[in-house]
Image (cartoon, rainbow, N blue to C red; front, side, top):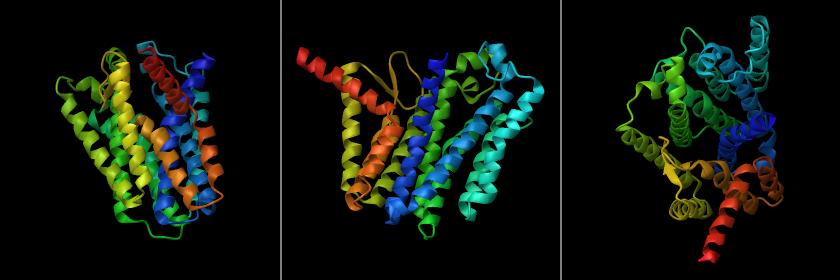
Length: 331
């Protein structure tokens, strides 16, 4: 059980925090600012996002106890008394309020950080509990998990760099993050569709027929890729385009040689891979930090630190490469 929890924590850390850190690096690069000077601000936003995620985790367990029991799922708060659960929830919310009122000094990141908390609270907490209200649930989750945290870190970096937030950059980041968040929560809901049906949880995936869902999935992915291309174009760094192209080639190789099913959202039988996940969690932040290191001597240690903090996808890519070259040599 402890190993399973550790793996899930590592996956969450990679999925949520690596793209968020990447947006911080990319915004700093776009601003043309000294990345080392912005590190304290970047660290503050990442830490605040971690505390926000802790609140979300506690809130989800707090509000899902009955449904988890009905579906036979383990809930970490099931052995606590009602009073203990409320105290735990209150304690998890306190750090968020501290960041909101004492650490954020600019109105724009403060607003986005607040809206992230509101989105998740509305998603889980009765009487709104948007989780059970179809499409509003996926909108709330995508907003709380990706849209508003991304806007928080981008607006904060502009503030710490002493510049006004660029409208096109912020809008592109918002569209990209929201689409990415929609794909993530929809994949999760469709993967958990059977359990939610058994427990009577009326999620979007439970209510939605899947026979023509691929149209919606590819539409969301197309919007996401378009917004990402706008961000890459604004950064105007050939190395980033090169890494993006190599990633697509790598996905094509994995699909061809290892029969991996590359999906936009909807899980399918076989080995699934959600398109662009590894790019956001590994190649995008590493490529941006590589550009930063080439432009600003003395920042190479930041790249090494990022690789240490987010090792999971590096190991996965290494294992896949070994299998690929092993198969080539066998032929």
